[in-house]
Length: 509
Image 1 (cartoon, rainbow, N blue to C red):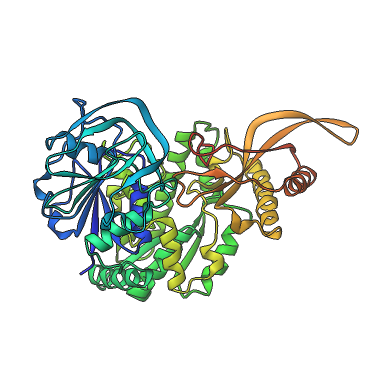
Image 2 (image 1 turned 90 degrees about the vertical axis):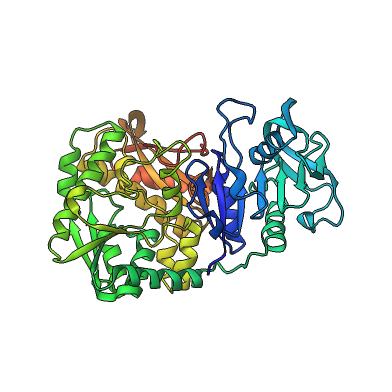
């Protein structure tokens, strides 16, 4: 049976990072909200409590019944979790004199303590709290301190329970991964058996068992997620899988044809449907970003539903949903209001009457790529930048017309092809161009122009949750800017977006 770790989410912005760090140790883990834990906690081999934006002293503090965990399973309580254990178990938590936020260094580490194996005095950690533990809980033993935080880490005598006031999951805690390794492997004794090969073997068997001899239909996008999902499904059920690739008129230049050609050699049963006119007609005159997303999403469902009926006997709909989408949909505060409205997590229109299968729903984006590599998917497909479901529809600000789509397709093609020819494509996580709803004055030859401005965007990220802009070479930007202005009629100005996420999003709508 697969060893697994339970991460109880108390609303921390870093909870997903905890899961990612655990997965990097080849250990399977699941995130569950503290107010909706799994029914069988005893099935897990260890538990990690996340941080929280709340104070344990607040009336709004999240509470959890510890009786099913304390003394029964190895427990690591991070930040809020550590303060919670102290505050409600005989210790005391009070406001710190100053907000303890940012880098700090361990000034004391308890010797011969397995929890801190290979982590020495001076190691950098990351703090993020306004309260501090003044007194340890009953039977609490001090394990580490910083100059400003005496009780930075502790354990509870007679239990495999540990509390830390810093965040091991963030990059700035230099030995954070090592600390998690010490806790999960050396103390909890968890097997490192969460690998791409083990995932493929387990998932293929599960799909075959669940689907049986019934037919499955999958909407392909040409992206990494849907492609890996398709190959896994094909391995499990073969010709019972039917794939549909819909052209919504908002794809990249020549993408519909090129993606179909790529799929042709993969043995998948793929049907291409050109519905671009239908989408563009539905979008005519609409400028509101949210309404555009809903129009694109609803039109896709209509087209997909119509095409799926041409394959009789379909019982299942497959989706390339990945774990960040699932986490958002089961957030601490209920289904997240921030889920992109074009994305369909865990639900379908009632009229489709199909059961749902999501082979990738427990994977992060980088894990999807590793799984894809293990099942020999072409590196060119696996290395494709993420592309949003609504496509260029959310990169054209304002109303969408055929002319605007064609203009942006040309700009985007110059940008993406330029990244490839300069060997920059693989250094970028996602890139694209945005057509702005403004005209600006320019001079071309001896003539004054009043034409469109486009913004180029290139970011580095691992899963899209956070992102930094890429410092592309000035010579490259200069060449691409000139090429766009010279070759794309209607554009006379190019700008480069140097915003990071947060506060800006990767997409503009």
